[in-house]
Image (cartoon, rainbow, N blue to C red; front, side, top):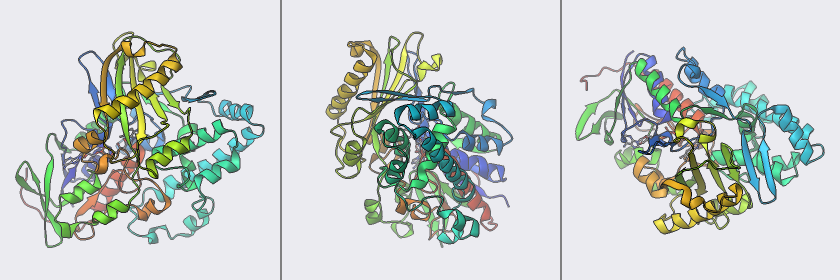
Length: 497
Ligand SMILES: Cc1cc2nc3c(=O)[nH]c(=O)nc-3n(C[C@H](O)[C@H](O)[C@H](O)COP(=O)(O)OP(=O)(O)OC[C@H]3O[C@@H](n4cnc5c(N)ncnc54)[C@H](O)[C@@H]3O)c2cc1C
């Protein structure tokens, strides 16, 4: 039966929830505090002709994204040109560079060239990663995770051992590879899950399959094309969007949400999907209606925040690929500074994205569009001085890589983004960028619950609940939340916007 549904937030999960809820026949209204859709995946353009994707740049797990389009009778190709990157990315070490080819067999041979026997081990590793990916996609990620009972089935029990749930990722990788370049290659994808390879179950080697084997892709025009496509699909299903419209309060009565307060006006809804950051959403509720208190949030392991520089260069930069990982230092030292010491990294690794290598449209002719990203502990004080310090560190290493000692003088656009910007723009708890870390205890039922335990018609979606951080999981999260709303009993409602 048709319900009047509010979605809070037009990030990936909010867009997905809006599209699925509208497709199910509901009247859907999406409220977004910012002036454009996308949330962490927004884009901004400059007067000088640059277009910067603000967040995601690794288009991995393309099958999950394509499934979203297929659910609406469309394909990504109806909206943008999706191109494979080859090489997929470069890993830059202190003693050389590993350029990761797109072709599976070339990648296998590259492993073999670095370590005798590693080619065969690569195949075994990826066979198991493929199993985990397929089992994960079929049996795990689409569950609302209200309770572990959902996982009690003979099929899931049979697959539990093969999923390596109880083996640590670091230990697992070491069983296959010894060469430091290969262990770095296999370990770095879990950084996307906001966790240390030491603390994450080996099950997440599924990411290696979803990335390295399914390939690294780029939507021409930038990642934001996915956002525009998702919004267009949600609108075609009937969803309505309201920008510059932060939800100020969630009003409840008798165990149900009654209305949302937007720009001082209370608007009645039958159900709400909050796709805004979980901690913030709960702050819109009376304290007695929240799922979690302050102590709970303080006890969670958050995924990193990051320092980002969006840079325009008036010349093309040599020796850079589309994706470049500057791994000249130990991964563990940086990871420990994020999770253990919770301090600015002493030996930072960073990532440089240069989409203009693939897409001339994101920079003025002959110029280069560069995005530098350094992960760091959430909650740090991020004044201009410290940003500048790390900017100089990254630029010096870029100069070494490009062989251009006058790189600073080529910059014609620069904007930094860090902890306090995540707080201000997205109401992010401690300025986290990627939500919660996917440690074992914060996986599935261990994540903040998808439904409010006190208000029967309030659901949560997004990277802080199931299945977790990243664009593909956020799409799935919105779909699960919309399904949960469909399960609600028929409710009468009054009033309209
Ligand atoms: C720098 C960076 C790089 C990343 N790189 C990748 C990558 O390469 N590949 C990948 O797959 N993933 C990547 N991710 C992760 C991915 O972007 C996120 O997991 C995903 O976009 C989260 O979507 P979401 O809908 O959960 O949250 P958000 O995108 O944060 O959406 C929440 C929305 O709610 C809005 N909101 C908040 N409060 C209110 C309110 N009171 N009222 C109304 N609206 C409100 C916010 O403005 C926001 O638009 C990256 C993230 C970051 C930050």
